[in-house]
Image 1 (cartoon, rainbow, N blue to C red):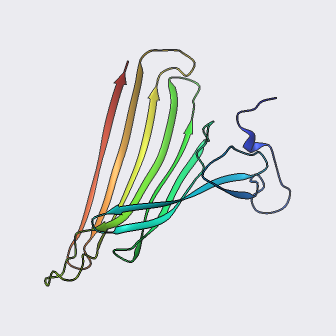
Image 2: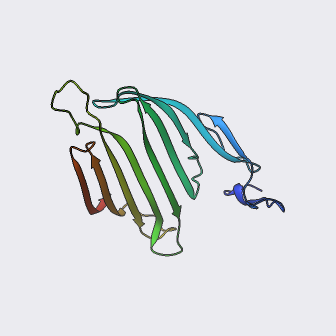
Length: 184
């Protein structure tokens, strides 16, 4: 019989994690296999002004059909700063019984270089770094089974940013936002 969530069909009697299957890494993408906890990887490259060229690996578990818990991890190495930088997103989604098509709660975090911390001689490259943490709650409003031409969405998000200029400059920014979208 076809089943949407095949990942919960095993239970081990030994070990710390009884409900989790062995981890299996695959290149690029694939389907959820019931006997494994799947993760996919691919090499990535990036660039920006302060980090210059970055190389890394993208690890994720996003598939069709959608998993309840999804993550994207992108650790990279900055050639310009000779340090690590990264982007991570983790979120959990579910469909409640009433009033919402889907609810997602998650966290996006980033770390990259910035232009802060430039020495007075202007020969030394910028050594600054920033850390960004953005927790969010995403509500797709409407009855889950009702067909409708309209879509309502409310996203509540917070922002916590730490800018570090390597002893020359430090700053912390805290904020939040609420965004409502309507589409027809």
